[in-house]
Length: 151
Image (cartoon, rainbow, N blue to C red):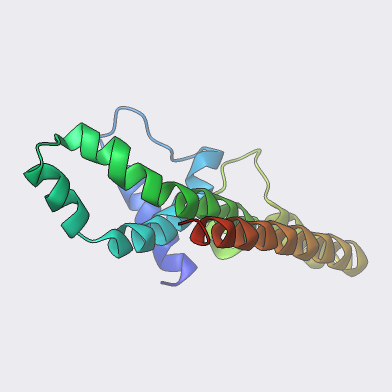
């Protein structure tokens, strides 16, 4: 999905009057779209047969969640959080739409540097952000491969 669609969807969902506390106009809303995408892929890979087998053997919902689902989803979920931080730090469209006043992501800072004519500063921060996000993604990849190798 394009960033503009996610951004507008989060603005509309965050402004609903049913929420007692809303993430809208906080920095938390910048990290919301990405872990949902990656964690849903991990949950789809588990399938329903493991949960059904546990229920046949008398396990209740909380026990199935704590003993089967969470141990299987924890490594991809941790990696998805690291990927979310790496991607969200470079996302410009969603950051421009959702960033609260006073909060500034690296992509918004880079964009402002280019708008002000400080191309060298923008390129330097952009290169630094690419190196940092590349290192985080490499760490997430190594982490998931380590857990995939476990029996």
